Image (cartoon, rainbow, N blue to C red; front, side):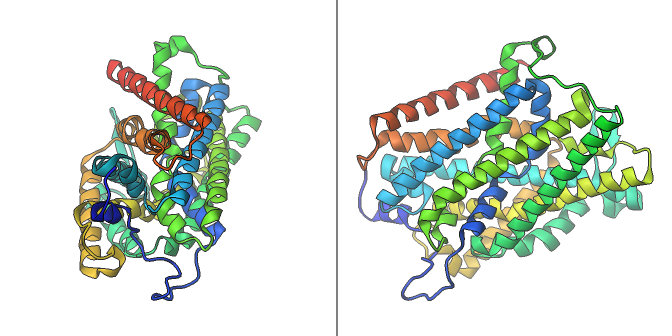
Length: 437
């Protein structure tokens, strides 16, 4: 382990303390604020692909995997908080620097940046699909803008995304404190709930009218090809329960940092309920016809005016939900990039020129990538099998296994080894299955 000035810099917080004696900032964030922000970090684009995993796995295995991944997420959060409380580091990269030196901090920062950037690109791709449609094979799925106003230059993907980025997302990403996003986070969860409720109502209505799809309780191996192909769903679940990169920024602004443990557990429960509900009712509504991005299924022609309105409300509510999730995921991307490039500079929140240059640069890069990449499924598979599994399981378990503070029990170390082997094994199988397919 290295000591001295470099470790102090790696472990220094990205934001000033909430109640610093020389900076009389407002009262710390509440437990509900932390729950909203953690839940919003998790309930992003992953909810769209959860129903497709039910088609592959069947209802019972999908429910079990949701519970297992949520439980593993709780364990990794416990590891992070335990070493944060016992040490001097107040950032995730600081913990990795304490345990593994500069290499550990650098690995963490790279994974956070790749994961955050990938998620932001996924959000913009889905928003673009909702507003301007996409081409799936030989089938053109129209977007809301084309359905309402027809095909014009200003209803194209490029111009629609540029408008959303500069007039909706830019004002939100310019907020310097993550707690300032608590109201948009609450609204995003509400919109996610609206989406889930409307899908559930549509599925129940279809069931009542005898139009619901036949469900499978267990996977049909013959239709999937091999048993290993089932592992391709794991990256989607891993992506759906990723929150670890925002643990320390949210904890730093809590009025009572000890509340963070409860905030994580409540958020995991909320998200598990969200995912099972949308997975079950989405699968019930569309069956084996469900797409990797379920929003695509809602552009199919409805048999009534009310049906058209409901389809548009479902799609638009989720697009706005993603717009509000965007700044929460942008926060760790900007913070870790700043920590990597400008570790010797003043705190990012106090340096306006650096803050603005990073914010505008990252937003432009994200928008450019989203315009050029048309499909979200490959992004899910790549992120969920590589960087996300490192952030959520491997890195927290490695910190516990390294145990530089001498606080891990034998059981903790055993659990850490199991997490690492489980994460590495499932990721390798998922990557191999995707390459084989």
